[in-house]
Image (cartoon, rainbow, N blue to C red; front, side, top):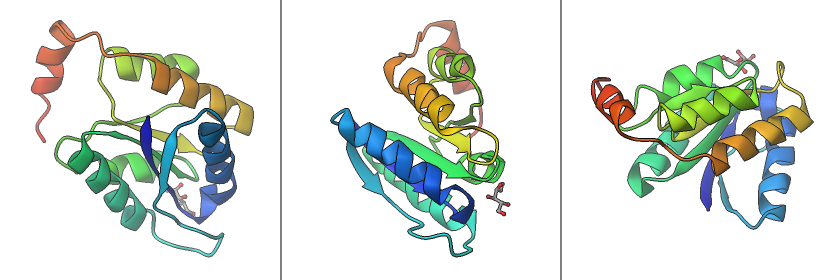
Length: 141
Ligand code: RB5
């Protein structure tokens, strides 16, 4: 799977762990930065990843300290359904019921092993469609 990924300074270390995990599994990862722990503004990264996901109708992962700022910024983009997940179950339902196309993680909230498990759940769960499609169609974007 092709995955666009990005983080701010607060999630730089976790992003690298997630990329390592994804590449080990054979995913093609496109990294939109940030590339160090130097302070940056999360919306800049969120916009780049959201645009890539929109354009390619693909899948993205955004990480910041809490995951909140990234999800807020990404959800302003047309066609983006970004879900902040703190458990594997959140990730499964974000896919099954909400057809989320960007997973948001909070590096100051979620440890590395749990983050990997959440990523796994997100990438391996499909959208159920049906009534859930009708509902997501009612979300303005
Ligand atoms: C950066 O300090 C922090 O505000 C950011 O990583 C994120 O948590 C915002 O939602």
